[in-house]
Amino acid sequence: MSDVVYTSAIEIVRIKGPHRHAWLPAHEGPVEFGVHGAIQEHYGVEPEREITTTLDYVIASTGG
Image (cartoon, rainbow, N blue to C red; front, side, top):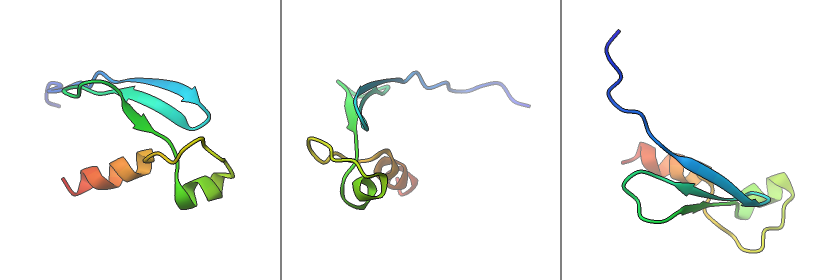
């Protein structure tokens, strides 16, 4: 097995309900995560505003 090349240091803080802030390496300020559209309907939540989901970021990252 090879040596570890990279360990990501990420901090995630829950704000309220599904709304979270994540501090990511090489990104200034927090990234917001929440719910919108079909995801909020599925989980039966009514956020104060619609915010990009973690699922959206995972899907976008696979194309990058």
